[in-house]
Length: 246
Image (cartoon, rainbow, N blue to C red; front, side, top):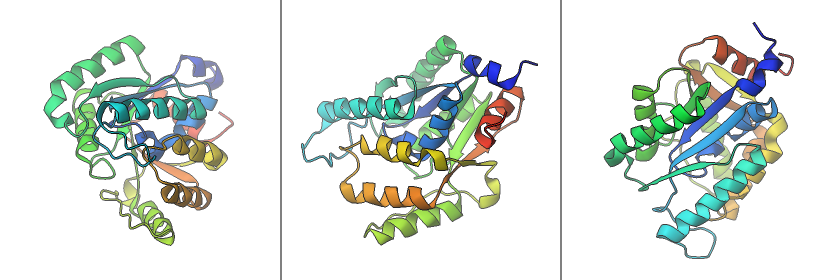
């Protein structure tokens, strides 16, 4: 077997999200993989056109989608990821576009031949319908070499507590049991990048939310993964995420 570091340039991850900013749940992990030479391709099924604009520009529809795509490009640059891929399906309606989404993702996977796919755990963390649709479709159609990102009940409580300190009533809808987490990734070295990447989303996150996230990142330095099935490729990636001495 090749030394792990020599394999890095051959490894790639396609991370499949519903909306620009969804990578915030796993941004430190993605940045850490990138630092080890793994190519990370973020894919966004929608461009967030049905969301609200918190930047004060009163953007909506296509204008908001274009702004959020620009923000995702900058966030990816901060994290050291590959340029994002935007599928531009209707925000909030992915359940109605399952076959089209499956075909689009199949084409991307054929073209990029990723070593690993990453997406939301069942329930989509927040319970958002698009998050859940992405998780279900990827699980059903592309289960080989799949890693879920998730949030445990303990970490969800920590997030809610921090949000409350800033006057934000926030509850994670779909945390999973602590024991269901396969790997807790130390992302303490990526706190600045996590905050800077999230701050690119001025249309999505008001200042109060950014301040709360900054405090949360200071106090919670892990991100959580669920591994479907270990194999040699998965184990190489896990080695990067668990240690700098692979």
